[in-house]
Image (cartoon, rainbow, N blue to C red):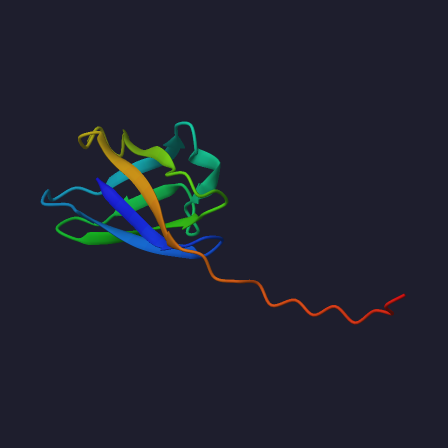
Length: 112
């Protein structure tokens, strides 16, 4: 489970590190699914390529719109590269709003 904690309307970024222990390139397609999937995003795109014996970091962003906790799932499904498939992976994404930052507003108007 990856937990996103922050203020209401704030954007929180978490990183997922993927390692490729094999001697072949691995390629994954990333998909966000679930009730609140639209509140999460993958700013670097939905395709991840990991070099042999290498690693890759995926940034997952969350922007809270509501006080209630948001939930989604990050699915990584393997795409065949040279006949090699990696294991499919899933990560549970959950959020919690810890505080509310007041919006600055100023009203200059005539009083009658």
